[in-house]
Amino acid sequence: MPHRRSNGPPAKPPHRQVRNFRQRYDDLEARRADLVARVRRLSEAAKLHPGYKRALKLLNDTYRREKLAQRLAVLQAASWLISLLEGLTSFI
Image (cartoon, rainbow, N blue to C red; front, side, top):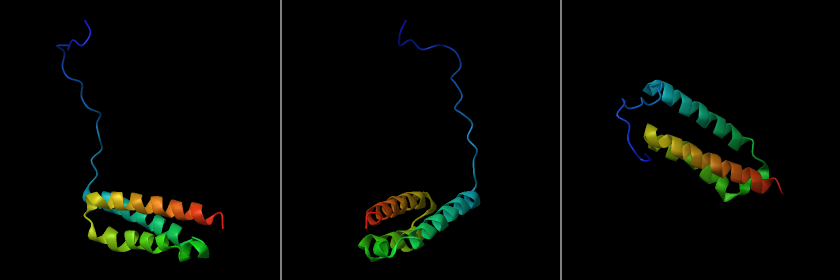
C-alpha cells in the first residue's frame, strides 16, 4: 500500500564529521584571506566603484563583528559582491 510506514528500524542519518571550533575558525579565515586577495587584484576601475569599499567593509569590519556562525554568510555576501565588481569592470 502506498504511504504505509514500515515497522522496521528507522534509517540512520549519514555520519557527519564533527569539526571543532578551531578548525571551523581556520577554514573561515582562509576563505576570508582568499577573498581579500581577490579584492586587491581588482582593476583600478573597480576600485573607484562604491561597491569596492563595501566589499572591504564586509571582509573586515562586518566579518569581525559577527559570531562564527554568521561569518560564513558575510563571506558569501562579500564573494557575491566581488564577483559582481569583477563582471562590471571587465567590460570597461
